[in-house]
Length: 226
Length: 217
Image 1: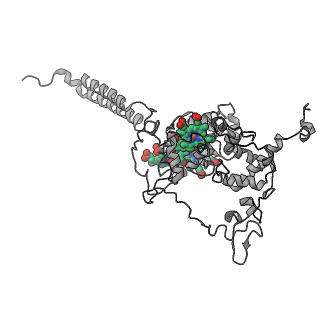
Image 2: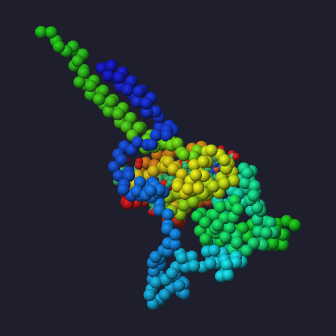
Image 3: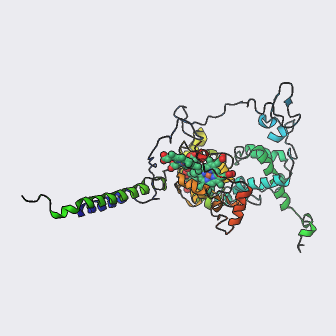
């Protein structure tokens, strides 16, 4: 009987030395104990596909695709392209028909000044939030172009406080975020058009703050500042 | 006639039964230890096509998780970035590094970098990032300290009991919504503000599903 226990103890030691402990690093894919319905015949986002030649389950949208039937019969705001006789309407936000709002341009193709959305505190706060995620690594917290990447070789980042950028039309800043410029790439995939306007508003706030004088501070808040 | 079995054999049936119990106990312990996600998954660290370093990019450079995982707040999946996101910087920084060859190739051809997926919920489980992230549940609760990992590994078990453990008592795991993307932050409970967390759970009607159809839909 003793030998049975010895064998058992030996087996346990063997098992532990082969299997190791929990949490050990390994590059082996995890074993699935009951793989019953773990892998169903469906695609999840960013998954691999054996069907398509390029191996991607996420299909690129063909050029010129127009959304169909969105918002049909639902009137958001009176006059927003709603055709009451057919009950159909073109959602301007989806078709991106408004040049000012979705391209930052006027009808004649030049960059527009001002904002197509109302500039509120919420908008500027949203702008700050997005700025700190997507712009901060290069443009820095103050917008002076001294982000963390400057010390790693990204030398061309300009300062927002140059006259050139202070005079730039809002529409052109919007366009730069959408399409990029020089070494800056497009951020259109990361910032929705409305978020881009929020960021433009925050850039304006940074410029204003950088060139502020004591007169911009309300009397009650000055607290001894001169 | 001589006896076939010695006298000590009388105790044998009992000893065998005891041994079987011990064997059963050891087997049960072995299975709970080894055949559960806590052993099978935790520590999975595949070799990636590019040795991308989170501790450098997210830790040292301080890039926000959403810079690369841009859809995490908005959708169910937390997208892994396309090569263009890397080229935002690497078109200027380390342009000739051999480590980045795959990324440059992907940017040129448009074929994705073949990243190996680490965390994988089974297809019969419904999971959604945005509901969690927008309710004060930080990445660190489910992915560990990614900002300190040179190569990402599976840090938590993602078993059903792991999910339910939090769903049964969310208040102890919730952070201030501003701290969700700061993996070094503390939960409200750890800051001694459990009452605030309970208020948050109440005011925002945070009701994580505990019924089967919540996750198996």
